[in-house]
Image (cartoon, rainbow, N blue to C red):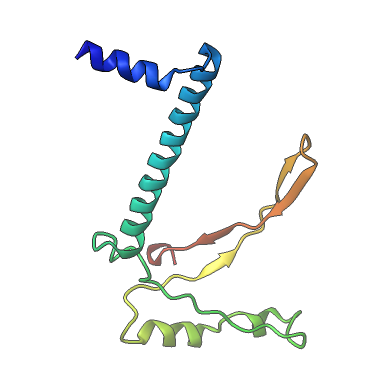
Length: 132
């Protein structure tokens, strides 16, 4: 077995310095790592999108919006759902649970002065049916 390793060593390391050989080994290691990460991400996304285990965690909710126009922009009653509309939604045969999402009043700002980036963040809270 030793003669085979010596032969492979001669073929691989012919005319290559030690530093160049080390850099090639590091490059090969990085390339293998990237290939393994790509295979793992592909497998994870396939399981997430097409797997049967996550069937009840994907696409089992419906978001209902109300259209806001320039005419109703300042009128909070016209822009929000009336109690009758909410009761009608709850009575539908396809509704299992119901919880409205309401905007909060948190003033949150993400600021990264080193990069010169800042942004206001929008946060929502979702009330569960037990807290309504």
